[in-house]
Length: 219
Image 1: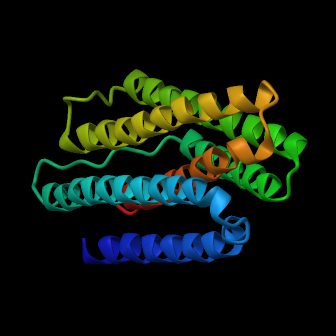
Image 2 (image 1 turned 180 degrees about the vertical axis):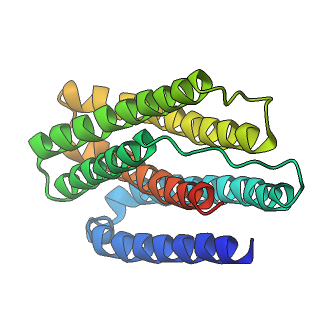
């Protein structure tokens, strides 16, 4: 349990540090714009703080799940289930989706509307394919007799993957609103913050999935 929690804390610390460095590098346009954009700067800061608070809550929630997972696995009725190979494919797809959102974020900082559209498309499609792949993994396990109520290990697998998938679905709601604005031809500056927040959220979900995947593979 200690190793996994330390790993999760380390990954989150690296993630937050990277976000801070990225925020420092992309926000000077606000400072240089003068008092006219002070309200926009305030809105941007509030949105980021709100997202980071939400991510902290989600991290705490999954940390509790991980702790419960480790405590439960040491009981005698725990029987690990085989990890479907498609989970490795799903991991690669989620990584590519995160790359797509990073592409959109970078394009937004350079005023490249076409790059934003392509990056958002790659990220959104990747997320949908990832969720479909997770459902296929569930189907394979059920077909092999690994039902939710058969064993505690099975229950934890379904709960953890379902919780992660639900958070990704929530992200797709925000993504769809941002993508719709871009496809309608909104100004780059008008969608810049939304693209950045989507990218941050996708990166977070990727790191969270890597932690969960490592946890399930190591047990």
